Image (cartoon, rainbow, N blue to C red; front, side, top):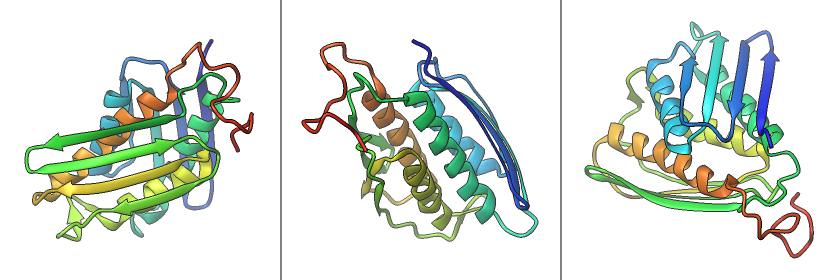
Amino acid sequence: MQRNAVIERKTKETVIEVKLNLDGSGQSSIFTGIGFFDHMLTQIAKHGFLDLTLNAQGDIEVDYHHTVEDVGIVLGKAIAEALGDKESISRFGDTIVPMEDALVLCAVDFSGRPYIAFDVSFTTERIGELETEMMEEFFRALCLHCGLNLHVKMLAGKNNHHIAEAIFKAFGKAIRKAVIIDKRIDGVLSTKGMLE
């Protein structure tokens, strides 16, 4: 079963194309024009074993908000399309990732009911050129457009780069656990018989 998606989004602010294979090997080619954001998206692909090609052209001369948010929208839609009816997926995924001083918990549920709890304290306004507040905006947009329940909790950390990288690695690992096919699951993993 192929679990792939190709999504394009064109607005007056951004032009974004995503090609996604949920059952890849972690290969990626990512360009958003925002170096640190590219680095973080690469972490999701690598640790989630997602093959991801993502190209974004946005009005970054204004600021990075439109580009970061719209990448979240398009990636969320790609994940949703690749999952299809969610038949036999494990549905839930969680992990705790350390990165030197940082320790981050991430848990996901492909319930179909979008929700985000982002309990992270950054002590700087930017990492590289990316505003730290945009990380939550990225994940919020992604959750809304793929029906994902996401909890991110920083358990420890002082270095902002380490904290951010632990978040994106943890998200990739949690997604990997949640999308794995388990043949013991007949239909979807819900007593309701549906995920939405």
